Length: 294
Image 1 (cartoon, rainbow, N blue to C red):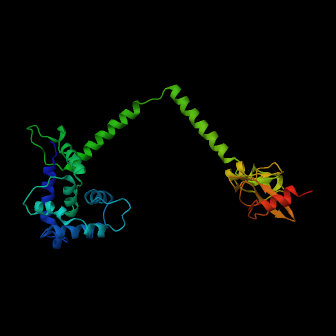
Image 2 (cartoon, one colour):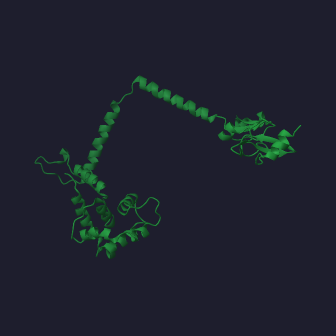
Image 3 (cartoon, rainbow, N blue to C red):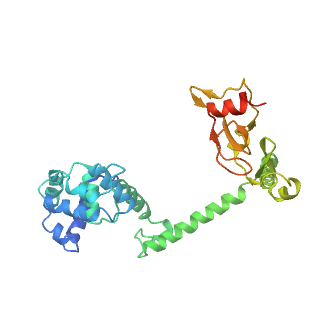
C-alpha cells in the first residue's frame, strides 16, 4: 500500500492529541502562530541531527549561524499560520517541510516524512504472516509479531550460511590476493625501516637513520626529524660578484655573520648548526663581504 502525505499528517494529528496535554501544553493547547514560534525557539538548541536538518530547511538557517533561537524569534510569524490552522482543524497542510516541523513539535516517533514512508512499507512487509503461522482453515494463529520476525531472521541467516558455503575462490583469484598481501607487507616493512631523520652535512641536509646517527655522523650537526622542504630546498651557497642577490627588489639570499665572516644561504630560516635566525642580505653586506673582500 502506498504511503501518502495524508497518512503522515493523520499520524501527526493523532500524536498532537496526546502532546497538547503533555509537557508542551502551554504551547500546544492553543497553537497560535506566536506560540508555535516560541516553541520552536525553545526546542532549537536541543535537537537530534535529523531534527536539526528539519529546522534548517524550514527556517533557512545558514550553516554558520550561532544563535538559532534569536533567528527563530526574528522569523516571520505568519509562516506559522498554516501550521496553526492545521492543528486547529481549519485547513490542510500543503508543504512537507511544514509537516516535518510539526512532527518534531509533537514528537512523532517516526519522522521526517521520508523515514515515515520507508518505515510503513517495512511494517507492511512484516505484517505478512508466513505460511507456517496459519491454520488449515486460513485463520491466523494468535502469535506475536516478535516471534514472526525472529523466525524470518532465522530463515534469512540459514539462507546466508548456505550461500556462503557455496562460494569458492578460483586459483588465479587466490594468487592475486596473496600477491596483494605480500606487496602490502613489503611496503609496511619499507616504511618501518625508512630513514626518518636528517642531518646537516657540509652545505646541505641528508637523510639518515635516526638510531645510527650518533655513531655514523659524529662531528656534524644534531640529527632532527625529516623536513622535506629543508631537505630539498635549503642549501649553503658560495657567492661572487656574479651572484643574483635580488629579484624584483626583494632579497633571494640570506646570511649569518660570525667572527667577521658571512655564510650565505639560498632560503630563509635558521642556521643549521647554531640555530640562529638568518638575515636578509643587504647592499652593505654584499659590498663588505663580497666585492671588498680579499
